[in-house]
Image (cartoon, rainbow, N blue to C red; front, top):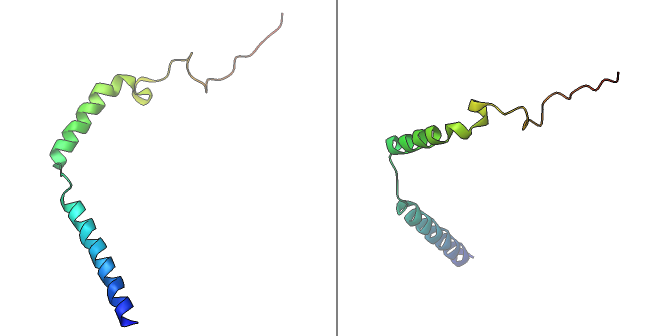
Length: 71
């Protein structure tokens, strides 16, 4: 029974070491560089953003329906 527990904890330890090695090998980027990249992306795509530019009335699926009158 204790042999089973020892092998189980060994498997968990090996899995943990493997995960830690994987995380240590990840290439890190400084926050200042990420923030600059994000700002540049937002500025380059601002003209496509409907929250900034609005939606043309012809393309707006939520526009109020037009009323129809008969003469």
